[in-house]
Length: 284
Image (cartoon, rainbow, N blue to C red; front, side, top):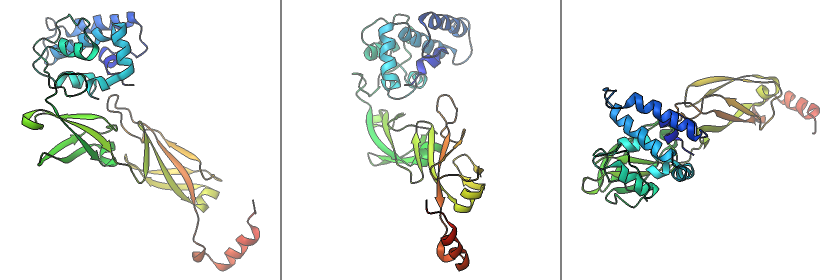
């Protein structure tokens, strides 16, 4: 489950109410617009207040722990807050979390409606589903889609997850925002589990029996892997940090290689060697 509200306050998901309060007070002092005149400080102050309003309330915190960033359309909270412009954030959060008080005035005049998900407001947003290649989801990059007859170039962030939503400003019907629900195509080579990848590789019989080195291309770079002597088919090799980069933490997952033996073609082997194999290979 996403922890973006906790990240806003710099605390763990298991933080106590007292730890949340202390973190909030420290950050609120740091980013208060009367104290901090740097660009972006006021927006950060609003986010901190909003996060604290939710996490300091037992019921709202339970809702967030259950549904995570799906409550903000799949965006992390910071991106959601910054993507708005023009309506009181208090009212938006009331719509999401119920009619509880959001009384600090942290969003006045700074956030807009136009949020087109299942929160009961902002129905003017346009929605569409898109399919993107597996490689683009891992590496990120530009991708073109067609909506209402218009070709639109969008940027896919590296490490995007299946079913995440992207907001494209002003590209919906009548100049509304376009909300894209992302479907990632399967890969012929890899399977993905969160930030980890798995790939099946065939290693020559000789290398499997006597050990050696094996070269492999990954999304990150080409690597040379050491294969131990007498490696069995089905063994897994972990390449730490060769998986998918997490969009929030920036940390890479791992790549797991599932080893399969690559048998030689008998037609390419010497006849005497084949006879020797038949005579000397064990039955079991």
